Length: 85
Image (cartoon, rainbow, N blue to C red; front, side, top):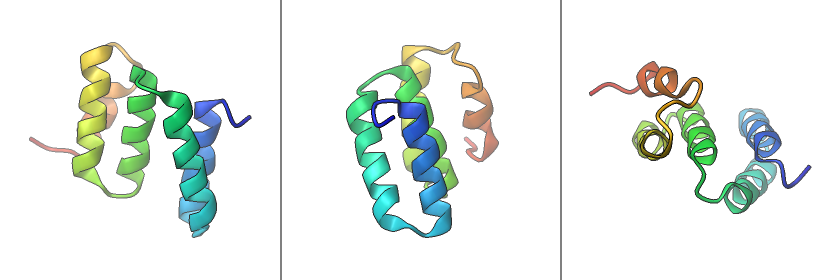
């Protein structure tokens, strides 16, 4: 499943919250390889960064997703969830 970026997002998120830094870094590194520059990738990266309280980088990723596909499900929810103007 190392080529399915949704699986890699979930794995990285679970590893981050469980404190398993090695698996977290490996999953996110692979996510970046597999996801490329798709709007879905930027949405998932934005969500992952929000989970890590890295709001500035999350905003950048979510804005990339919005520019490429403003109709992605939950995109605007995540843009508004923790990030203000």
